[in-house]
Image (cartoon, rainbow, N blue to C red; front, side, top):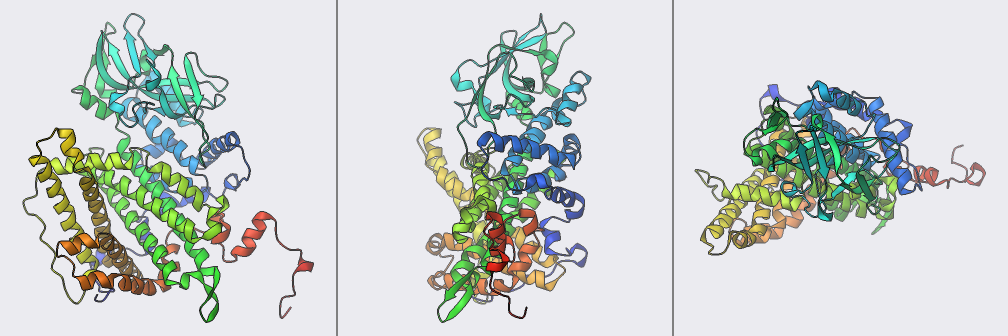
Length: 623
């Protein structure tokens, strides 16, 4: 299978990255991340056992306020998107529900206000209220009967030019707003509500409105709420919410460039057709998806950090040996090192997507939208798998919430559906890619090289590129030849399309890993990252080895040799494991996870109050 440590050529000296940590945080740790991380040492984030759901939810609101007592206001953070992404990465590590609450308040609610009305004097008092966290801001788009199909929502706001007000109403039970944070009546809430604007008997499409939900004592007149059933981990006040002819002042319409009022009070839509106005209304989706991916990567890092530290100290009996750390077993290494490689690859994919987003100054092209969507889908799904395998490899300790990994798993399962369900999101993206213009040159089948073979990550990139384009062309041809309806034609290739979208994401992630290796200044870092790139690529190719074999891209001998090569890569990675996870800037003291501590037994015993009195302990030799 060749030499798994074969090095790609080095890049220019002027682009060298000082460390693995500098690579993972894209050179922004000191400026963007350090103080957010420092806030997590506040005692308000210490574990609390046995809380009822309502108590847990109230604690999350308290923690959100404490967090921003240490940081700048939300509007300042929104104007520096890297800070928003950093907040998304760190905030869920000690309370996953914080991420959901802050993402909605900062990005979706206040971000929509910033995009469509921040400079307006007539709503300045509302903006300041949200910016001070005097009120929390739900974002009410999704409707119970329509899921992610926000363009079809049916909540309506009918304009009365005579009174210069809107009447906000929920026409039926399918149009109830779903999963908004509106269940705690005693916490002030000022929401952004998406509704269909109707004026002069015409439907002008979906617009955002500022609507007060509760004043801190009770729900406002005409607002109806029914709490959702209890959820694991995220004990927030999710609810079904509906409106019974609620009067909304004209000034609370966040029309931005999407319309205006004439001198006689009539509403005049602007900003192109209804679809263009809708897309403008949803302007916070792309940064929201990057926030979701950031939270997923943060949870993936913390999961593998904890699992690997525990595996280094958890002793087992090996054949012919006593007291062998479980991490010495190749079976344990295969699972955890493959997960570590996924974390690194996904982190670098996310960095790439964030850089592209920031470079385009808010203008999101189709290509950038595809990158962000695939990054969100891959990051959440892959990190969900990482948390799952880390929980399993920690045995019974992985179940306890105090060790965090189970909570991360619950968070990640929610992130898979947040800001666009992954399967729907990737299918939509794949459909757009299939319908796009064919490239002038199709990728050629990569040549096999006996020296490096299927262990070379650069060969893996070419194999993935070929598979990605092959699946795209196959789906496109099948649809073009179909005599069925468009739905049936698409339905016949949708699984191929999803495989293509995933292959594209993995290929870009692996490219980012490969190009990062020569940028590292230290040879030890380069060696470790090179091994991770080889392992990540090989595990991905191995998953579809039958397809590559059938296409003549791999030989039977190469496929048969893959398991042994994976084991060899794991053996080479073993000395680098601690160094690779130290780059995450995590610590046992920050996570408060007993199994992450060097003496995990003592840490767990302190947690549960099981430490033996000194008199009951055997004397320590030499004392």
